[in-house]
Image 1: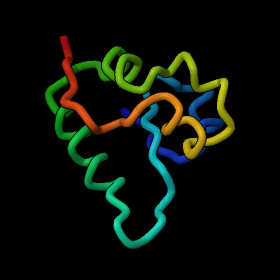
Image 2: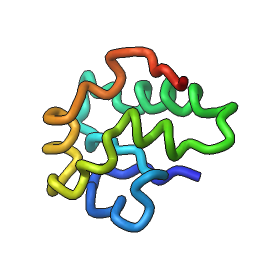
Image 3: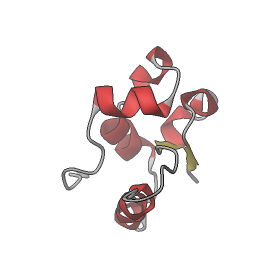
Image 4: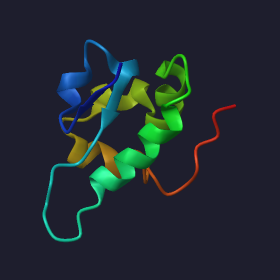
Length: 85
């Protein structure tokens, strides 16, 4: 199970099951395409928590008010292929 939201506050109860996403901005917005790529990489995983922790640096979420602030400061989410090892 995963929780996808644009509010870091939504992740407080289940941070390791959380996936941040930026709000829809129209035009060239590709968040859902990027999200689909990430979810397809998780399909065969039994437990996504360690992968999400590594990918999204979950321990740092509490330092940010929103995904708009969190995402650019921590990483470019989908710029690289994820190494699940």
